[in-house]
Amino acid sequence: MMNNEQKFFTHIKSKLFNGKLTQSQVDGINAVLDAISPFSIPEQAYMLATVYHETAKTMKPISEYGKGKGYAYGHWTVNSKNKRYCVKNSTKTSVYTFDEYPHLYYGRGYVQLTWFDNYLRAGRELAKVGLIDDEKLFLKNPEMANDENLAAQIMCFGMAQGWFTGKKLAHYFSGSLKNYKGARKIINGVDKADLIASYANIFETALRLAV
Image (tube, rainbow, N blue to C red; front, side, top):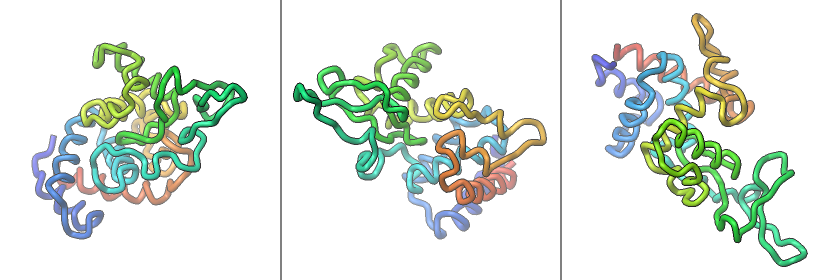
């Protein structure tokens, strides 16, 4: 719980937002803070840093710029029977057809959820804990991954349980262990790992200032 919210926002505004925050960004940050409140401060800091990076500083769930252009999950391929299909995951060993699901599963939400299989898992896991009624919700309507509340739950459960890469928060944050650089593997290998770690350090300082 924050006892001094002003110190938190003053610090991140200065260090990460060029001295200015819009109301939309403030609202987005508050929504994320509410969702991640059960986690430790280092975990919260890393989740905020991930949101900051993956949403291009908007702090709102967004769709991937370019909608997956140039990536296997972002385009249809036509087979010899003139059927459109797309691969389900990065192994490219299974596919779904446009007739089954007429959607491309490019990045959406706070963590930029990608691939058919990850949308399927997100639905199954949230249905399992009673947060949604239909385990295929995100397959049928992928834009629901941009719903603020659902996007937050995808991030929290996904990062805690290792949905995206098999790596999870506990691998990098436990007791005295705090590995902001390594934690990037929870979402996307080592892509921009140092940069996102630097954001996490700023968010951690802000969170501790507000305690």
